[in-house]
Image (cartoon, rainbow, N blue to C red; front, side, top):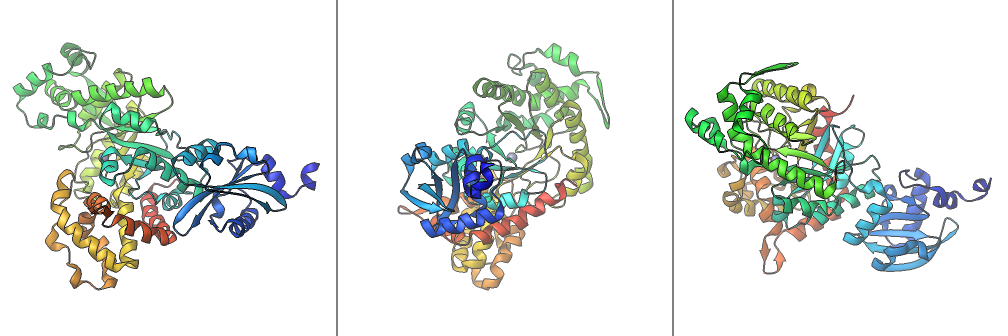
Length: 530
Ligand code: ZN
């Protein structure tokens, strides 16, 4: 009965496991004692024990540190290589060797081994909320928005395009999610999404740092002209498809579809020759490219170790049910396994603002996409540019149930700017005017329609009115698409805004987390499991 004789902390160190949170009173006591010893403000929820080692995350000013402690110095192992501080202290009656490490990449890799819940996992066909974080400081807020909803939170999510624009690397994206999850002690498991990958080089970059989901974007291989081309033009283009890559022939393909009626529980699809030609011409090359990307992943990661999404959301024309059916049945035939597919929906999914279009029409089309996803999967329907589309969430939640992946990214940056508008009005005014000067150029690759003439000039606004810009359509969009310029603009060797924005947000991190919890919580609420 030795456990009863020992102090609770000693027995916890011996038998505690990473997947179990420490009892609340003990973590509060440990946090305050550790604070007294190290001078770090410890996040009580970050405390964890694994194999006799105590782990904690703390902050000093705006910098965060990993703190580890164990009864034997040797237990601290490789962490010591990166330690910036070492010492011994008595904690809850035990003498511990302590070390502090920076929250940099190598310690993050070690933490992912020691505390498996800080590693992303496969989330399969659980409904998911994608939470992109362009600043690298939002994960604790994302955790709070998702916690208790039953949704899988995708906390490490960024496209290669966004990484380029924000000068971040896949390592930084993954590490930020790891530290954020540790800080909040979120042990439910989270997903990752290497978003909008266009090449196998992109895949390799993200695979090497532990991404588990890969969104393949074959948009460049989609032939948008197929919708409007003449019948004879599409007939010629059909013959010219990459049949080797599709492991088929024009004749075989015709036999699979033309004259066939596919009866799905809630939908019947008739394929005429023209229907097939247009679908195949539009998406055939995209299918072939997706197969190539999938097989590359299969070879590099191994079956069962990754998840795939296919996205054609950033193309010109909506994906019809027949086209969706063609894509999915061809991917099936070619042995591709995927967890989600992002069609190009009807209506406008502009960045950072609500859905623009006919809701009844959206509902009808979304129901058809879901019917196909249930029949040929099941897989999830992925909604890209999904932030702030409050009018469609109830529809999507009702029709798709679990089979939905709502992807957001820029909205967390916008909510950061809202906090800046509240606490640093002078800085916000500067950002707003700079964004105005950049909008014309930065909007090029985005689907937006903001009119700068409708964004109020800063001299007209009182400080109290500044946060309201984030609720104004044109202002919100203008700020949404200019993030890359705002975050990476340099004057000489100094960033013009980045460091000041991050400093203010780090100094007021709880305020930012609360804002994210509120805002992304509104995204999660319609989808939460009853
Ligand atoms: Zn997208």
